[in-house]
Length: 175
Image (cartoon, rainbow, N blue to C red; front, top):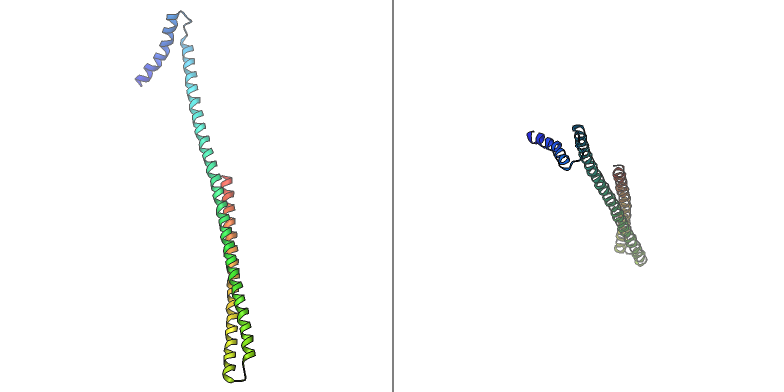
């Protein structure tokens, strides 16, 4: 407190001494106080400007971070869409393989039917082959059903991911 008071007095006295030595106009106490107030006001204004600059820097950094979050969200959506497409392609390929296997088994069954004689053992073997064909057909149908269900699930997951990413992008944009 004493140092501050001495500093203020020094600020008032130094201009008086300089003016006296140089034979210039000696400022009055009012002029000195006014100059001092202007100095204080200028310092306060400088502090306010520094605060505003810091706030603007923070805002710019947040904006840059939100732009990066948008890019990441879009990349995640694209990646999820690609993964969903790959799963769907694999499911369709598996269904096609099962269908081809069914067709091959059907053809073999037809050949077996043509070759079967009236022999009871041959008839049993043919019936067994027919059962195998029927089981293979059911397995192929089940594989196709599973593939379609997986494809639908992947589409739903992709849609949910896309919606979540769009909401996140909208939230970040709003901020």
